[in-house]
Length: 349
Image (cartoon, rainbow, N blue to C red; front, side, top):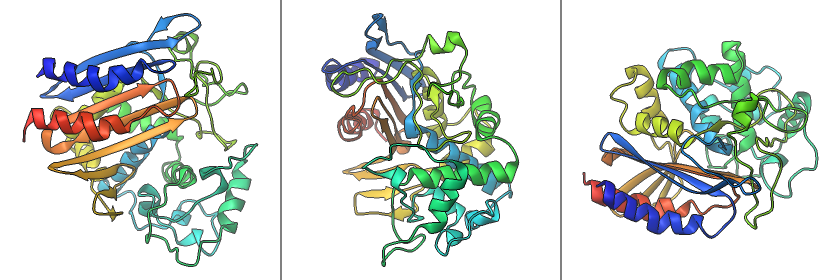
C-alpha cells in the first residue's frame, strides 16, 4: 500500500508542487500509520527545504478546531447549538445578528457576510467595537434568514471565537491548546498573537522553522511568520502547524482509537453534514462534505494570498490527507477529486 500511495502522491501532487514557487508538505494517514512527502523550498532565498516539521500558516484550517470546541461544549452540557450568540456576546443587538445561533455560526449557515469576507478587500483593519458595529448594522438580502442558506464567512468564525472566549473566560489560543492540541499530542501547533510587524509572535527558533510565503506567481509576501487579519483585536490571527502534527489531527478524526472517547465523539460530531448545498456538496461544522461516486469525503480547504492548506478525510476508509503549501492558490482540488478517491479505492471498505 505504501508503494501505491507514493505513486499516487508523486504523480498527482509532486508534479504540481514542482510547477510553482515554494514547496509542499504532504501527510497521508491510512491503515493506522502515516506516510510523509516533502517537495520544494520553505524559503527560496536561503534554499531551506520543506520538511515534515516545517511550520506553515494554516489559514482557515483553524476553523475545524474551533468547531471542535463547540462540539465539546455541547457534549459537556456547557453550551447548546441553539444558543443565540448574543447569550455570550451581549454587544449584539441588531435585528438580524441577535437571532444567529452558535450552531449556525459553526456551520456557515448564519447568513452573515461582512466586507471582510469577500473582495474587494478592505484596506485597513477593524477594532472590536467596529466589528460589533458592522454586525449590528448588517442587513440581509430579502431571501436570507439564519439557518436557511450556506454562506461561507470568516467574520462568522471571528464571532464564534468571541462567543467561546466569553463562555469560558479564556483566550481562544488557550482553549484550543488545552482541550484539543494537548490531548492529541500536537505540540508543534500554535495560535500566536500578531505582532506590530504583522508576524506571529513566536520564539525565534520557531520562526526559523516557519515558511516564507509566496503568491501563486512566485512573489514573496510578508516575512516568515506573516499573519493576516482584518480585525485588530486579540486572537484573530492565523494558526501555525506542521504536516507531522496535522497528521495526528487527521488520524484522530478518522480513527481516534487511542484518544479520549469524549474528544473522539466531538471530532466525529463536527464531520456530520448539517446543511445540504446540492446533491454533491454539503456543509458540516467547519468541514465540507463531498459525495463522489462511491466515496464520501469530509474536507476543509484553506488559503491566503501566500499560503494554501487542506485536510481531507474519507472516514469510511480510515483515510486522511494533509497538504500544506507556502504559496497562494495551490490546487487542493487535486486531493479532493483525484488523490483521495484513488487512495480510498486502494484501501477498500
